[in-house]
Image (cartoon, rainbow, N blue to C red; front, side):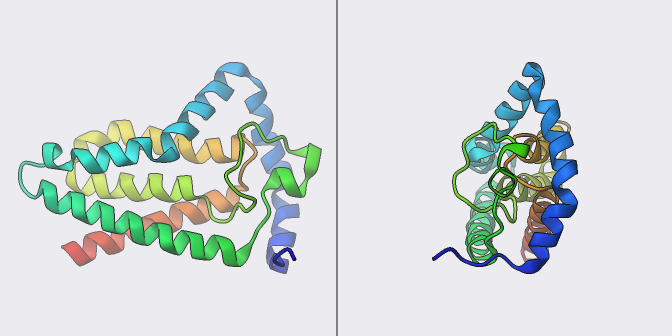
Length: 180
């Protein structure tokens, strides 16, 4: 038996459908589609694992501490993310609206809320900004591209991305405050 989606998501889906369609239409342009696919792949932990592993080399003092902080924050964020995602069960836009929103990248699962890619991108961008701000000119555009890619590839609603970003920000700020 399929879990029931909260009624609020049903209304929100209808409100966001046209915006998602418009954003996804830009993905019909091959160079933009390639950019979104690359950003999405980079958001599949590749960049974040490298960033975590690089902390001892990026930070003269406390690099191992930052490695541990980033790792623990990421693990906790994943646990909360999975709990929220499996409890709220919001169908992805390409499932809800069938052919009206095209999925341009394989989805890992059926549900879209919140965007885990965006959550991790924002979380690591904020953490890195606090410890290695010289990397922000690279990470901020990547974070924005990852967020846009989720909607542009038909995998998420805009509100999924906003919620994922807010959750990632909250985890990063909390982590920084506790470590502070």
